[in-house]
Length: 339
Ligand code: BTN
Image (cartoon, rainbow, N blue to C red; front, side, top):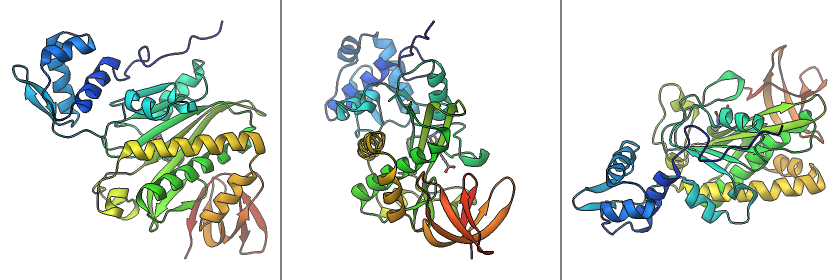
């Protein structure tokens, strides 16, 4: 029996559609005080539920002013990525159809993989305002401060071999590159295969996880984390990470960035499925300072070596000319600039 696909209403922990409706209603009338009674009527809940949800939104950092007797209004329109707002902006897009939004979850990649196993169709988008166990590469964690970054996973079902999965990671990097550059004018670099860098610091990362047979991907979760409005980073991350806000000196719209990123990704993905990997590989090579001529150290489970990067192979794998002259292809492992 085929599994029944989930919906935003049936997947545990997702944002209640009516709570998102409350936010949309307040956002669309942001300077006007709306009575609790009118809100209750429009979204179809009781006045006491409206009051509880307003408290909930306040806990989540949304600046809702007013009280039950006088009515409510938003001090400023929040930059929250609710499915309603996104859907409006993504009409006709592969990614505008099935959007799962969480105020808080452990990891959007974990959720997307679960959806994949449950038969979710290609194109589902899982978004969180906050992750409590955001996953990074190599078992690291991804710090996911509430409503500061974009924490997003795309569920795809491409007819590809597992070895081609890094192409999707690269494609996500290219989309982030294009969106950030277009919205902020910042100079963005890409480090193979999954880092988005600004002035050498990490502004974003991609984690692609999949369920596959030896020859064929069943589904893949492309997880993208982008540091947007963080003002600072704790501990040793302070030296390694940056955000678009830190780099530009002003807050950026996560919604606009996300819409741009998804549109870019969709158009690259379609082209890739039609024409193959050539353009993705060529664009990554053109945009990444790491693709060729960079002295790097490669560390994988087996060994660690240094060399000079020598371009990407046809399937997007990084080639490194080792110090002993041998040409190696990096299939997995960490690549770091070497002094
Ligand atoms: C890395 O550079 O180590 C990859 C980081 C990927 C982080 C994103 S945030 C959204 C998605 N969900 C996760 O748990 N991880 C990815």
